[in-house]
Image 1: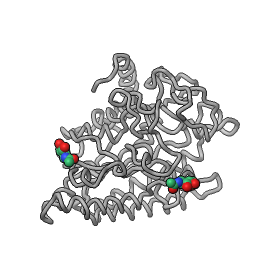
Image 2: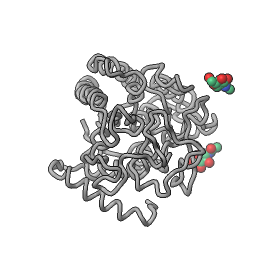
Image 3: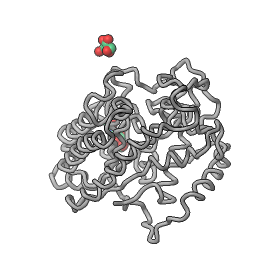
Image 4: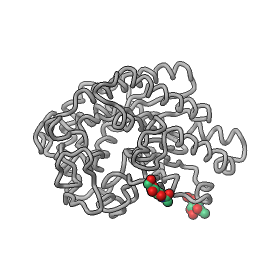
Length: 364
Ligand SMILES: *[C@@H]1O[C@H](CO)[C@@H](O)[C@H](O)[C@H]1NC(C)=O
Ligand SMILES: *[C@@H]1O[C@H](CO)[C@@H](O)[C@H](O)[C@H]1NC(C)=O
């Protein structure tokens, strides 16, 4: 996978640590390819965790199309991905033998007509609620992303697949990945918010769009749950939460959503018998990767507290990685590339946990 020479050593340490905590729950019967595979396409719906460059073309300050972003992406290309390299959506594409899904907003009409291996609609700062993130500029909310997917079907895929049955087959044979909802917590969840009510409302709006995708022909869903936002550098604000610890009320609230989400997939599976769902427990993956340490350099020898960029991080909520920020020399010695997003190595470790160890991801 073209990893620089330093990484194998870090990876070994990581694999060892992951094994310690996950070895006791190996599934007895292991599918050769998780979730069957043989997908015709990967369609990505989400936020900055998986945005592959949509925000580059939107009027917003939330962009990642400048150095040091992308320093490890195809020899150093800032594509708009919020990391030094590949995202988890990229690793999912690679695992299933598909090209990395290009950002919808960066495609010409001709390119859209020519692509049948998937498109990425994910947009940084946006969320499930229509107004989430708009405080920072334009972005594509969940429903706007599904609107664009519908447009792709009508304007492009119907040209590519001449008959209805061909199109139906393509859609049913494609993988739909979603990773969205944490920004709704970041923007709207306060210590005084009722976590149950908030989660219920958010999940209701999420499922509405999943049902819409199903109505449009989607059948295979790869659903990523929400990250432990309360442990992310941008939330570890000096004075309220000690550096190295996590905001408990926020993590508890997000975990509540995740539990409801997992349950709703079991229910959906019963309602839509011909659909299948994979639940990806990104929350616990990131908690595990971060480790219990409260030190800058945790037990896994990685810096799991401070981001690579900006390298001088004062723990402020608004601090972000800008073109003028100083950044660390070797991003993959960190878990976080910027205060909000993981490094490529963290994303790669996710794919090991999901696809190889079969611990993080679970077919419903
Ligand atoms: C972009 O957004 C800013 C801030 O809302 C606004 O002032 C500006 O006119 C917008 N630019 C364009 C090209 O729409
Ligand atoms: C269409 O897609 C094929 C295969 O990916 C590619 O080789 C070709 O250059 C594309 N054509 C256009 C006009 O984009």
